[in-house]
Length: 112
Image (cartoon, rainbow, N blue to C red):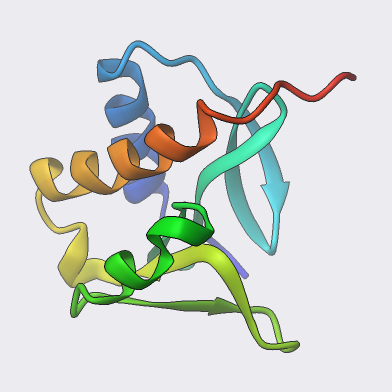
């Protein structure tokens, strides 16, 4: 699956504005942004994949642009896909990236 390069660039900018320098990794047929070795967010097609964590899962899914992330074995709790109508503005995209950062920065860094 190809990913939207414009959404990837906008996501890089949102992460940079939050003073975060992620590493990038091809994952799930798209592009993932990693913080401390943990997946934070990513791009799958024209969707934003956001890791909000299990506690914030239901609140994130209340957004009409959001849906569960499912790789064929059922929804992955704490991972949300946000469609283009939820990332159409830089402000909306930054809000989703901020939700991902709020969770991922609580995780211990993975050792290489």
